[in-house]
Length: 359
Image 1 (tube, rainbow, N blue to C red):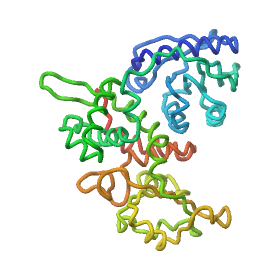
Image 2: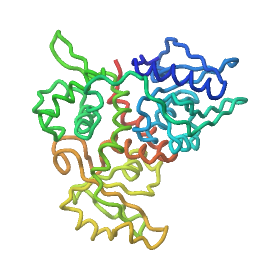
Image 3: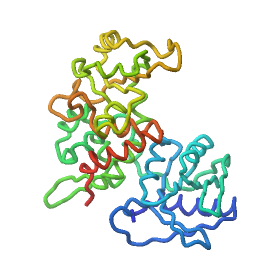
Image 4: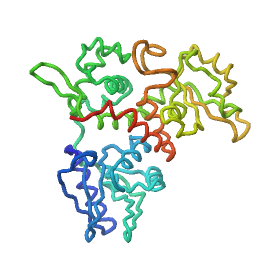
């Protein structure tokens, strides 16, 4: 079972108390040593009188995370799991329930579906927080520039031991950014300083990946959007050699390749250098989405690349016109759509797990 931070323990205890206060349902938690897949579990809960175990993921600042990422994290648990959060707002609660994701929070909001027990409580206001704040610098690590560096670390874990100047060049950020990012990741427990020999090491990679996937669609990706476009031909992307424009397919188009046809793209996501945009729009016959003539038009999302180079020479962000699997994975999870979440799971298992082999 994963080790809980002080804030996570506070959230767990307060959420259990809140659901008992609001619904009368008493949940018990217990720790046990669990090998393999159970290392992704933050806690195990039981309803009083039941022997059924409910694996749980604990999330602080849940309202600032992308709901698709939260759904995916809970669905990755080995059994029907539960999200334990500081606060779940009504909109998020509805989306979680639609996807069958159980939750409880410290305000008393809850969705529990454990027959014969069924509870759905939403709309309770968040109370003044008594949860331990994150250590200094941790939150800043997951702001846009920090996310660029973390993306480079996730692709190349050994990069954490490189000189700051090399890290900054590979991530496309200032050297000073690397300094405070490293402090934040150390404070969060993602970088370990070893003394003999003296070097840094990336640890808890799977958890770092999950944090990055949560933050990317909220913090970084909105700043990259060049526009939302439409095409009359739903398969327009098939006739475009995106590499000739210096771009890369992300999202569903990349996923169709990585899953060998499991996913049939409905929305095309493209990372494209700005100088190439006009020519591609003309060649692909794309128009602004506001000009859609009907619901049959195909949707295209075009984003600026956030890595150095277009595509980055000598690195693996863009290969054969496809973004790195980690970025395609994040694009899919950001949609919160069931078909894309399943494709994301396949990509994770087949193409990403190799980057995060835990100690």
